[in-house]
Image (cartoon, rainbow, N blue to C red):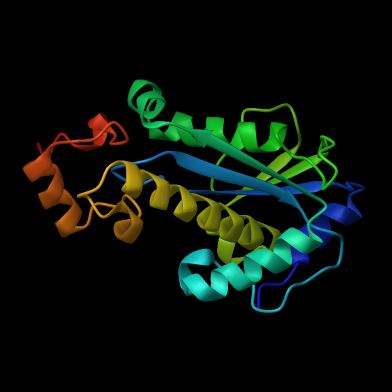
Length: 203
């Protein structure tokens, strides 16, 4: 179980609304890079929360439902392959994180402005106090929650991309560069959701 010691130290400094942020899809050959920002209630720990990559799809979905019920606010940010090719993946990731923070909203749809950002291994270009934590999704309960929400959201997008552009099995590989995926790109050619800047060693 991931503890909330990091969040507690931030609360003790006087901050009240801590937005925890993580991304998914950074290393993919296809699809958007996506970020989730969320604010969890102080002191709340959901049993079983950990880095989304360590969970089965079924377990992620179970925890996702619990997170959605408990979170004070959630925001999603997305940056498409065309933008990734134009400004590079690092800047695209930071942009997705910024968008996620700006999109933070409660269940009624009201925008929520955080007073502190806790980020997984990145700096968000915003004038809000923040801390970046290497492997934050294994150290912070809030960042792990964000990683789960981001992963579940993007997996649903992968199903949509797979339906629109069959042949690459994006619903299976999630856009990552598996051998099967690389061979499909060579055989069929890239789709509109592929990141051309990531395919230089494949085509």
